[in-house]
Amino acid sequence: MRDVVFTRQSGWIPSVIREDGELKLMLGAGADANHDPRTFTFPIGEAHLAVIREDLARHLLLWSAVLPLCDAAGTRGQLDENAAVALLDPILLAAPADVDALFQHIRWDRRRLVAHGADIDLLGRGQVCAAMRAATETSNEKRAQEYHANHRRAERGAALGPLDAAILRYTGQYLHGATVPRRIPDAVDPALLPEVMRVIATAERACAGMRIGRDPRRGKRATDRRDWARMETTVQEAVRRAHPELVDDAVRTVSFLMCSEAAGRAGSTSMEDDEAAADHRAERGGSAMKTALSFTDDKGVEKKWLRSSPRTAAAEFWEFVGDRSAADNEVFTIEDEAMGEGIQLHFYADSIARITTLREGEGEGEGAGAGESEGGADPEYRVEYSLVDGISGYRTLVSAFVRGGCAALEHHGPWLSDVAEFERARRRRDSR
Image (cartoon, rainbow, N blue to C red; front, side, top):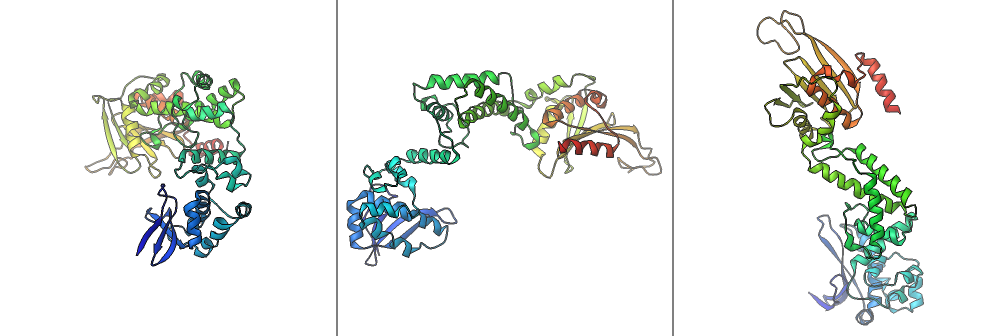
């Protein structure tokens, strides 16, 4: 039989219950293996109940000291009741100076106290009893989150000035640096907002005209990491040059905002729009547009494209890559069967092969495969390799091929037919 003897307004502050005639403190903390909240209890005495009823500060101090014991119990372990009971007298019944001394030697949850109004400066000086004089039953979780964020920065040696903090609030990253940044002018002190906007304007001017393209090798919505790094570096250099007083956290959040917005724009564009720049780079070297192409991946899946298709060949191919590319599927081929030529993209090695049929197979009888013949000569191919500079390089090569075939790739080399020589070139590049 369990009866609630005393509870406070906040449901998370530990309650006192009577279970089978025994007084116990009951609190919820942590979660089990199924992510459901865990509940812990341990015995207390009548004298402890009297203090808990009358002294909110002592009640909260006890809670903050017991929470680490609950954390130690994990998802299925038992609360160390002896350790919990041993905290009762020193926290609830001892003199304030002795309580302060105890908290110098035990683990305790500082964020809980901050959330309930503790004076942060006094906590930092070890005066926990004095810090709790203004304690409240209701919690302010945002205050606790801000305290935790500032504590993490202090551990890294990052001290924010007013403008630094305002910029982080503007991007929504003051509490959580991993949050996708966005523009929140209402979160900034109106007196500081004009200065924040001057920093943002510096960043916008620095990356004007830059874009972050898509990288179908990593999925349909993935963006080009090189483009991201290029924009990030450009923005950070410009902001540091124009506003040298800003700390790294503020500079990084501004560049993160610019890159995230550019990546968002890239993700919402069509594949045809994303191919425009690649088509421009690939114009040199012929324009004999293909009429029919076959796309295949390393798993044997095939997709056909015809000139009558409403989409361009390059856009259709990269859509195919975005759907099919994976860690175990990194080789894709584009083939023009009518012309006897094709290209093979090796994403795992940042390389490409162009393949040209020099002589068709002279098979006799039915059933001869594409690479063999019965009673006749095998087909003969010329295979040449080239290194590729990231996804932008792949886009240029694919656009050139679908516009003019293998001949159009001549100006995008060098092309090496000797495999050993090509492997040496690839190793030299990778070692840099």
